[in-house]
Image (cartoon, rainbow, N blue to C red):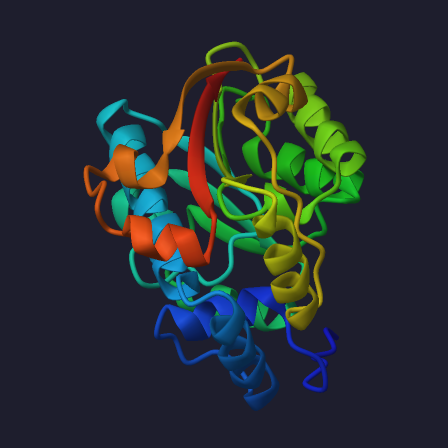
Length: 252
């Protein structure tokens, strides 16, 4: 039986609260309030991440994607991949038991979708479950949106390389990452991350491209540019919070 620790905030539940969700606890709401004092743009950043998931879902639907593995999924609500790919086989995953429990309930009437508890920092159980779920079909779209900036280089490289080995040619990868726009960002991100119980790792596009290899990066640009809303976060807000979210699409 999965145990839920309500004494410590969980970054996924904090994210859910900021997006307007209800699957969170007081400890998560308190952490969100504290983070927003340090990073007033956090709600906008969370929305950009979710909108990027929706954009990716729409693209994959138009491309005829039929198999999806999503990492650190959070809750499959508020416009997640299942809304854009209702007929695809989707394996959602998260380490947070709250997300898994509610995710299983949300997907209970969708036999083509499953939600498992898995930690991307320990890829073997995740890939074993994926092998069982997808069988011999290994042309897969992999979602890693809103996760890599909470993982160190070694763990990130490990999961991405093992995913590349698991997936067949023709597979695609979508992820988001944080890029600093100045030295002041490091301290802000570190403090904000600690409030949610995580460490934050900002990276440059060049560092991300090297990290995802042997996946080959196709497109990498700010999320606001992907979404066509360049002024969503203003330059004045960037002065206060000097970092931006970027999205990368890569292929096998």
